[in-house]
Every structure is written in structure tokens, then in C-alpha cells.
Length: 167
Image (tube, rainbow, N blue to C red; front, side, top):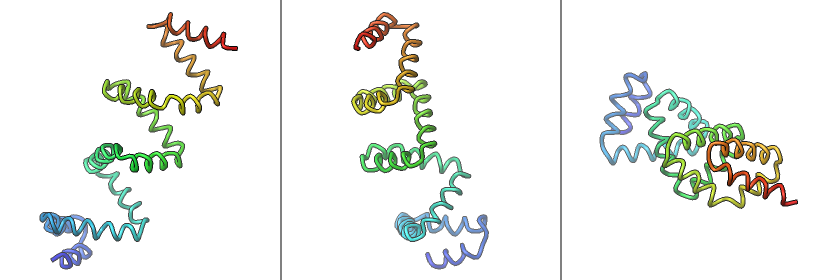
């Protein structure tokens, strides 16, 4: 049946393929087997993955589901590191992601707590990155001072004074 469906699919356009694919996908076992066979082919032809990605961008509901699953999966340390490495290899994407994370944390209390907890847990490595870049350090201190004008200004001024007297 799978072979017949595959032959039918290759002979027709996308609209005609849908019923044949739905038939294969309707059974748990045939769906799993089809996915596994597809993934094996994708492993052998990475360029097909690029095509699949491009096609998925045209399907917002499917893309949203993949992104949601990926986000949930990032609690797995190996997947988180793979994703971080991929972002590190794409600096513009990393900047976009960081900007988006900060924007989401500003709007969502749970996200804000998670981001702040991650910053706190990684304080030493973050400080090491920031202290070696005077422009970033200056920008952050300036932003802290602006934020301090609204609340906690006395604590912030004490911190700035302490930093200034550290010489």
C-alpha cells in the first residue's frame, strides 16, 4: 500500500497527492514507518532538508508547531547546545534571537524570571564576556543608570560610586 501511495504521489500535483498521503498518515504504524523512511532519505540528502524548511515557512501552523516542539525540546542539554552552536555560527541570527528573547521577557513575567535566572546562573561567564568589551560595559552601565532614575536609584548610585572608587 505504501508503494502504491508513493507511486500515486509522484504522478500527481500537491492537491491530488493529499488524499494518498492522508491514507498513509491515518494509521499509526504506517505513519511512523513513513516518517522513518523519509528521515532516512533526508539524512542521505541534506539539501532536501533545506527544501523542506523552505516549504515549511509557507505553512505557519506547521512552522509554529515545529517551533513549539523545538522550544520544549531545548530543556535537553544536547539539543540546547546544538542550537546554541548553530546560532553562534550565524551571528546575525544570534543577535536577532537575543533581541527577541529580551522583548518577550519584557512582556511575559514567566519568561522574564527564566531569563533572569539564566543570567544569574551564568553571571561569571557573562561578566567575563562583558568586561572585555568596554563599549558593551559602558552601554550597560548607562542603561542601568537610566533605569535607576525610576526605581532603586540610590542603590544604583552606590554601585556606580563603588565601581568608580575601585581604582
